[in-house]
Length: 392
Ligand SMILES: O=C(O)/C=C/C(=O)CC(=O)CC(=O)O
Ligand SMILES: [Ca+2]
Ligand SMILES: [Mg+2]
Image (cartoon, rainbow, N blue to C red; front, top):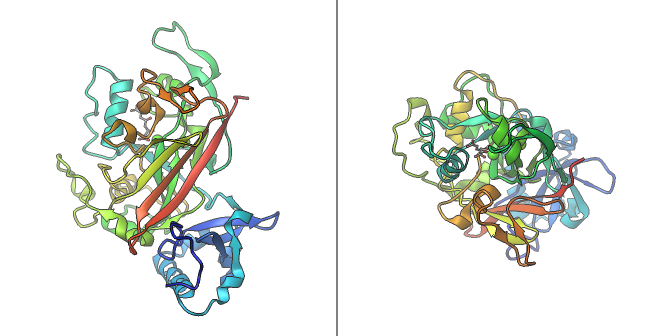
């Protein structure tokens, strides 16, 4: 129960309590917690200067005991009889949401077997869809932290080198194959000076957000051999403004899919089952085009984190690692346009009569996600949206 007047299907109920950074008018960005159609001003409600810094990092660095203490306090405030904190609620419609954390390092994985098989077929026809290493380790690459931007910030079409197989030489110009990648991001709170065992995942990772890893497929296809993605993915990565704590996702935990190849001991997750029953929705210009299911991801976030640090690489507060594109088995569960329109062979038909193979200038892409909550409702991870601006 709560004294708050919450819309029935809010998605931001008392079992969610995601953290973000907001401002009203031109005032200073500070930490807030989304609740119903409101944001609780944590700087004002707690008086703790850690929430007045304009970024979640200092709070995230405090670690899991501090995270759960504040979550308990918030739950107490919202479910008790004393409505004192009501004075610090701001209508969500009035706030501007900022990038919630300063991104330290950004890593992107490749953990959906359906996505990896589809991309293998499209990028490497004639070779087996999965590379020989795929079921032995979670493949990933280090991305560009400085170009991670919050939902709502436009994406400028990148330019670069591209060379189709039939072209004799590369040419330079705006990408003609601008794409999306629907992903889930994991935000590191507590740092680590070396390997993080799969069982220590929740001691370091604070929460999750929705990610769109924009990808220029023509730039990517020409540049990626042999070192992997570079400029085709480094121009922009968009994240949702709310970070949902892992503590809110207990009811979403499911067994990961059966693995058919034995993994090395450091990747054994039988004691840390972190499959997550998240459902993503991808909309293009307001039209739903895909519903990628997260629960089938072959590699889970604890395995990704264990792999990311197993060589001794340190972990910093604000590190972001994304799941990789989430694609399900069905054609309408794919997380990229490259897959949805199958390399341009089966264009998407939109209700206005137009078709899409890749993004056009002016297109708006929105990715949202939900998860089961402990009270039987579905909680919202919010959404990540952006509109494409012409190349400069
Ligand atoms: O298979 C390839 O060569 C390329 C794959 C991707 O572009 C996917 C990627 O960035 C990782 C992911 O999001 O799953
Ligand atoms: Ca990606
Ligand atoms: Mg990127």
